[in-house]
Image 1 (tube, helix red, strand yellow):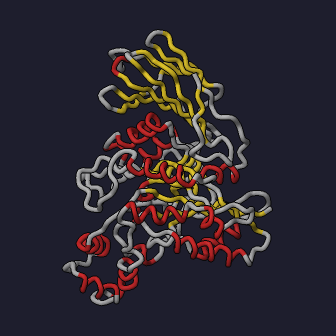
Image 2: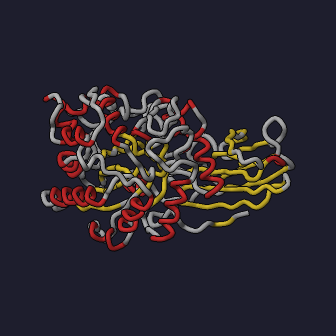
Image 3: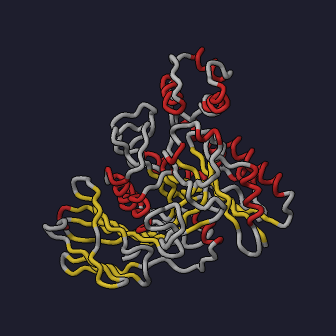
Length: 463
């Protein structure tokens, strides 16, 4: 049976505010056009006035009401989410197998910033815990929470961009806090500003098996006119495969197929000014289907924007094009399940941690190889710090760590976190409590063990 799997990745960043002055600053930075900020001048730009002919169309789109409309408060975001997460709304876009519309929420922590002119929701877990509440309210069956991160710019301004994980350890702290505080460890990732670079490529390869970053697409004339995205400035995927599907990246160039292990999937923007999903791209996905190998058709957008009309228009295009391909079915899926299905991965149980102590030595054994070179190890100290460290490898499925003055003494810790993924993208997350320097009970949660599992399934306890 021929099948297209629809994956909707949401870069989940919370509310966003943009002032009139900020809009004109972006116009200047993107197109080199400088105007005195005013409502009258903005109206003139919307009508195409005062703009060089070669830039007219792209600037008018840039300042259109649709582009400048944001969910600027949690009240506005939640009003949208309450409908999007309802079964009634999901069933308005049911797939050919009776499944309602499915979202993959790639959740960000806005951290490391010193200025915040766009009034973003700053702080670890600020957005993640808000979405946990929405999941508890609506209990989505197939939706899942994953990880999204924007590197911190040198300016530490929350409205600026960067492509460098090496500047801070906040990406590591974001993962460690989510693990220790919420027993959550990511199996899938969406890059901030669609940007990966060598340091990000190597970091992801060690821990996260699923990556929806590839935005390879033929450059349009209007793309070359926008300084923030042309010539590989941000979201550079010019050398990556431009057909729908996945590939394993190269160690030295994340854009070219190579011998790395993780899966990078192609994912275009939904109703955006750059690298947008189009009728032609949708038709290409239908053309690619064949035999028993499904094709992933993936899009991404932001929760800071009104998503309902975008999705309706997108699904209308898909259904319209599907009429020309009556033997092709469409299926909704989250980011992890889609790649499992396309790559025909065989289901297997998640990694089991066998945890033992000998004095101040921790030994971790697993019942099978883990995804990367080692499980993730982190600590929460009594003074509130979250730290990450490497393990000592004792064998293919055996690691150890000694807690002492040269590493970190047990009597300075509140908790220890351990986590890993496996080759089926199962996640095993573990939190070991520490009281008065003595390790206590280990809480372990398994996630994504079956296609029907949701990210909000109850914890499973182990000793």
